[in-house]
Image 1: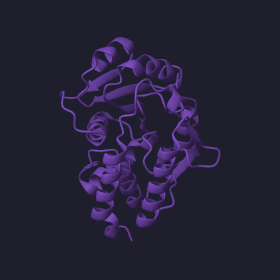
Image 2: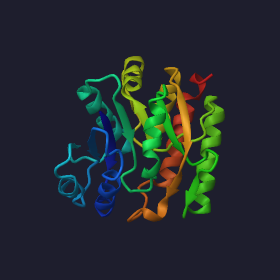
Image 3: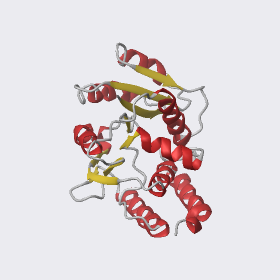
Image 4: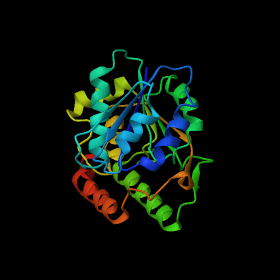
Length: 242
């Protein structure tokens, strides 16, 4: 089984395209969609149920907005409670269609080549950004460089949602750290990546392009708030890194 874990927060305009893209890939695989709604107020839940009718899916959420970290944690926990095969894979991906679904089949095949975690990386050779402001690129690159140095890791892309995990890796993280994700904000992807590395996960990156032009509406990430989260995370955790 391949489980998709997709956080949702006011993504109604993107959901038809999300359905179109996801239904066009992994046609020979058994898939299950886990949508973790983070308190959407725009009818996203109703749109999901309409677009994905006839497919295997569930929409999680209690109507409260806690942040993407909490949404991911709920989705991953659901998978751990329902997965029955140690070979199951878990795909995490953005709901706004900025991820390149065209590389997903390749990512899945690489995951099955004895890698625990496959990262889609805009910083890997031939990866990059499409229609992203210079300021956002600079802040992203600076944050990645700082965190790589502070935590002594070689991975290039630290915060991307777009990944393929082996379910057994998630079980190892949960067993070692008790909680998969504690951080509620966008820093959550760095948190779980660090936990995976500390569990000696075999990690590989594949190049991808972030297609911002495909997004309907604005990005949910607030630069100032996210920067504060990164700095706070760094202060709380950097001394444990080396």
